[in-house]
Length: 217
Image 1: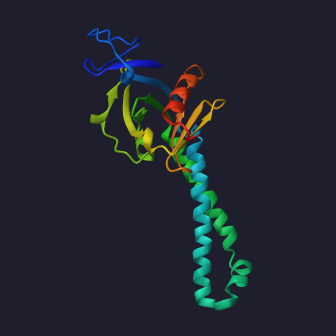
Image 2: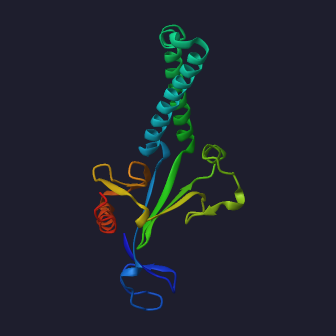
């Protein structure tokens, strides 16, 4: 939703005029805000990262063991290593175990509510969770009742993560209208932030991102 932020009153307005103090609000006050709720495991960037880490860990394990075997056995190590040591099935099992453990952690993280804001300087993303011990521990954050906040319904929520990406630091972006997702990269090939939007909010946010990141698609 497109809003106009009044720094004096610290409030968002639907029109370019503050409903509190009556001052006129120009382009620097323009914000685009929305909220999304989903299971942590449904964020495609996380299982994707998990698969890449598992593959890298398996390959690295094979290479390290091969080097060690070469040092100990000499030039015959390569043939013996792959035929007789059983390292390939072991590396595959390691990768699959890593993936299974990672997916379990993502499931334990449960549902999260994410607040997004596009402003003139960058993108703010805040992730809130219903604080349970499993949800906190799986995110490696402390289960601290003093940090809990209550929503409009009086239910406790906890700010699990907050990140801010300056427009100038984004290397490129990718629009995925069918998935309702905008992906921001920093550096060029690394997914730094995924923005999930309801269908009715997508076009407005996509236009703002495209205007801020010209020639970076």
